[in-house]
Structure formats: C-alpha cells, structure tokens
Amino acid sequence: SLYHLVSTFIGILLTFSPMHFLGFNVMPRRIPDFPDSFHSWNFLSSIGSGITFFSFAI
Image (cartoon, rainbow, N blue to C red; front, side):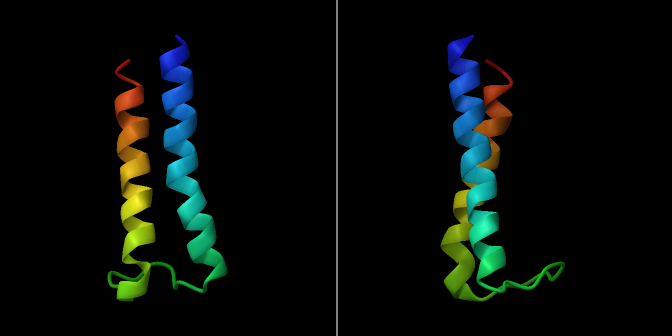
C-alpha cells in the first residue's frame, strides 16, 4: 500500500541520513561510547529505524 511505501521511505531516510552526516563529522566506528554532541543524530537514526520496523507491519 501507499502508506507502507511512504513510511518505509521516510524511515530509511531518517535512519541512514544521520549516519552519513556522522561519518562526515569523523565519528569513530565500532566504539561503545560517543561524544554528547552526536547524541541527537544517533537518536534520530534510532527513531528512523523504529519507523522502518513498524512500516513492515502495515
């Protein structure tokens, strides 16, 4: 359905765009801790993955 398509697109965009931005801002990979300045971007990425997960239930 159209709702599934749109919510999947928005979820994937919200998941991977912050990761792309964090990669350009030299966030180190594979570490359990990150600076507080990156918290909002990581939270936005987590929200996007939740939207993607729930879009598959539609």
